[in-house]
Length: 476
Image (cartoon, rainbow, N blue to C red; front, side, top):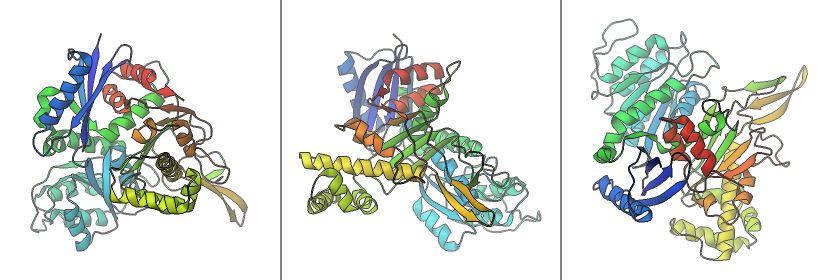
C-alpha cells in the first residue's frame, strides 16, 4: 500500500487525511488544535496521535503534503487603476491564489488610503495599473506612496511593464527613480520583499492573472509560511504547497480538466458554505454565445469568489437581511418570530449548533439562502438591452448554465440531513431567468473533505490525484 498524509493547518484545527494513493481509499482522519501561538507541533502531535490510534500505527507515508489557512489565511490588499478593469483583475489574481482579500483600492492612493493599508497589516499587497504602453503615472504614484510608508509586508507589482521595474525598485526601498530617470531623493520606508510579475492586464480586455497568482504563491511558500510559524513543523512533512483555498481550487481544476489521457469531468462548480464565508469555485470558460455582447472583463478559467457576508454563523444576520427573514422562516416551516429568536441565539454564540428539529430546519434554510445568493453573485447574468438598432442580448460575467458537475464541500453540507436539497439551491431558477447559474449538473459531495488533498497531490502526481478524487467524491 502507498499511503499519503495530507495536512490542513487551519486557524482553529489542524486536520489530517491519510489516503491510499493507489485505490483512493480513505484510511483515517484526525484533527488537533492549531496551536500557532505556542508551537504548531503541539497540535500536530495531537492530530498525529489520534491518526495513529485509528490506524494502529502510522505507516511510512510516500508523501506528506500540507496546506494552510492558519492565522486568518493569506491576507491581501490589492491596488489597481480602474475599479472595473485592473483593480478587478488584481482581485481575481488574489482570490485565485487562495488569498483572503481584506481591502481593494483603485485610482490614486491618498494618504488616508495608505494609512488604511498599513493598519490592515496584510501579508502581501498586489499593485497593478495600466495596460502595457498605457497609463504609467498612477502606478508610479501608488508605488511611491506605499514605498514612503511604514508598510513592511511583501509586495507584488503586476502592472504596466514600462514602469513595473521602476516601481519594484521604489518599493524595495532603493533610491527612487522618477519616470524621467532622475533620482527623486525621497525618504523610503523599510526594505521589503518585492516581486515584479507580468501585467495582469497587458491589453484592454485581456486578462493575464496566472503570473501574478504564481508570484503570490511563491511569496506564500518562501515567507508567509515562516511568518505564521508553520515552518516550525517542517521536519514533519515534505512541503507546504499552497494556501488551503488554492488547494481546493486546484483540486477542482484537476477534476474538471483531467490529467494525462483522462479528459476530466468538464466544467464544474464547487460551493462551500462555511461559518464565516461562503466560497464558490468554478472551472470552465463560461463564454458568451455568438450574437451576445459581453460587457466587463473576460472571466478566468479557474475562478474563485469569497462572500464574506454569507457566513452561516458569523454573518447569519446578513444572510437573513439578504434573503428576507420571512422567506427564511417560510422555508424552515417556522414563524418569523421564532426565526428571529434563532438568529439572536446564533449572533450571541457563533459556535452554537442546532439543538432542536426547528433549529436544524432553520440552519438548512440559512444554508440554502447562502448557497443561492453566493452562486448568483459568482455566476454571470444576461439581459436584453434596447438600442436604436433594436434589442440586443448583453452578458456580464461567467455563463455556468452548462457545467457538468456541482460539488458541495464543508461541514454545513457534509452534516446536512438532505445535502441534495441544499445543493439544488445553487441551480437556475425560472423566477430569475437572467442569472446564468447551473441548469442540470450532476451533484456530488466532498463527504470526507479531501478536495484540498486532491489539489495538493496534483502538484506531485496528477494521475494519482485524479484517481483519489474519483474514489472519494460521492455522487448524490
